Structure formats: C-alpha cells, structure tokens
Amino acid sequence: MGRAPDASRGASAISIIDLERRLARIEAGRRTGAPTAILSDHPIGDTAGDLRAADALANWQRWTAQGRATVSNGVLCLTGPELTAEEWAERFVTEH
Image 1 (cartoon, rainbow, N blue to C red):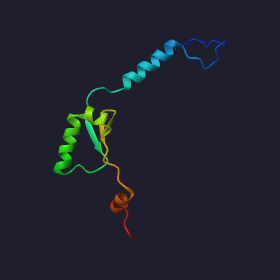
Image 2 (tube, one colour):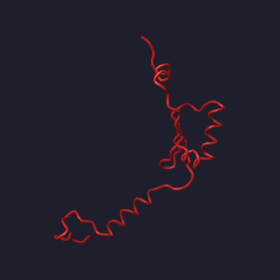
Image 3 (cartoon, rainbow, N blue to C red):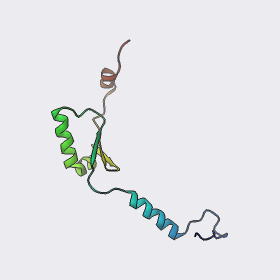
Image 4 (cartoon, helix red, strand yellow):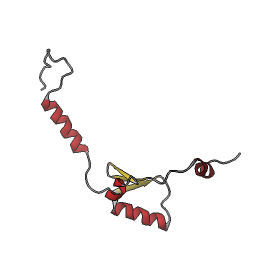
C-alpha cells in the first residue's frame, strides 16, 4: 500500500523507500562472478580460436579491462580487431 503523493512536491516525487526498493531490484538482477558462456563476432572453430576462447574465459577480467571483451548477463562477448574499409570490402563484398 503506497502512500499518497505529497501535493507540495508534485505527483512525480519518489520517496527514499521507493528508491531503495528500485535499487534493490536492479542490484538483484545483476549477475556477478565469472561468465558461463561465450559469444564471438568471428568464428572460433579452429585450434587457434579454441585456445583464444579458453584464454578469454580463464582470464576474462584481464580481457574486459583491456577492452578485448565485455560481459553481459554472464556471457563473455569477444570482439575481433576492427577491419579497415579495404579488409571489410575484401571479406564481405561480392561482385555481381
């Protein structure tokens, strides 16, 4: 049972208790700890990729600190190096 808003503060005012409840819900939804899955923007299927993925999972904090990966909801997201325009065109553009 919420209390009626104080007319002097306006209808959009939020009490400290409401803010604490919202913060508690947000914090409860956050996942902490090591990632449990891996996602990559490039194929991992070869031996070098498998070793890279294993290193990323084992050293995920270092990878995220270096900007080589991010963690979202327990998923370690690996990003490959940025391609130049020429590299991108060579890889993804086909002539018709």
